[in-house]
Image (cartoon, rainbow, N blue to C red; front, side, top):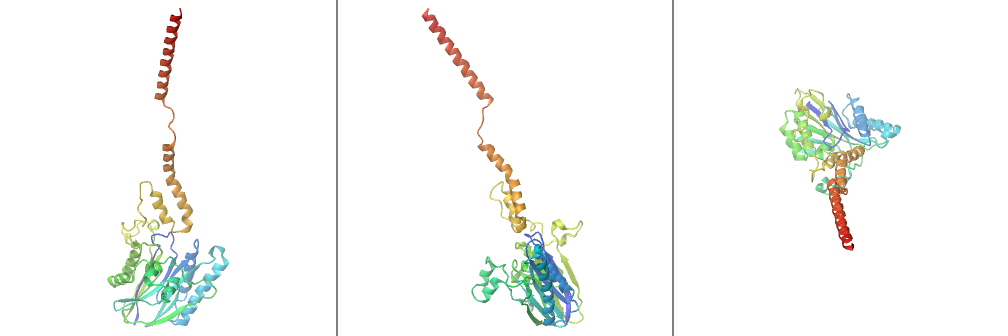
Length: 356
């Protein structure tokens, strides 16, 4: 048995301006990393981890070797965070798989996931290192409650946040036809397991199309986070193998003439997921709803709101301002004064005549 086809794709999603995910799809090594940290620190953390893994293509598929690789990645991320104040506190999840023969060795830290699709069934083979996952495992929270828990994004383990890291390692004996999926939580939090399985089965003969379909489903589900998918299959010896990698760009970053199929959304799906304005003139609130997803964009959102709301404020001020005298008013006043003057003159003349 040997490795068959593989594919890797990533997308920033519909709410984030940057993609802080990174991945490795270089047989026999596969990995997904989901960075975290302010400014561009998350992107840096996941990139450093992925780079450390890429340097070990010739690694033997043993759990000890996978631990060494992830510890080296942890050392690099932690060292950079310690030296650079702007990157302080950054970290990343990592879920890695190393294949040799019919053995797949996994190393795992964080809440990215690895799935196995075998005989028409999908099973999660990694445990999430997150607060809600710990509560579910302890019986204090149901899976349904975990899906909407306000702290569902809090992770209990990350690579690069400390000098030492606790790494889960395990091995799976693969079978011909097995399909493995590594993904960031941008997929697993937006798309349920049944849909993931259906998309994988629907595009079983084209892993590139399967990965693209999963990105599209996550975006249609809200696209609230960066989305990364890596797929690889196990085949009987002698089967053809090919690898497809792609970082799906945002529409504004697409190169001129780029194939429209590089997008993961239809024209209708590309409409931002924001609440419809309740009344005319609330366009600014719709525009700022997306910007609030990124903390560093709050200032820009406020500026946009001021720009959009200024005309409305001026109109309101104009409506409330008192109306001043007009030309018609002066004409009426003059006529009244003339009439009063003539009346007074007539009275005077009558009285003067009577006096004589």
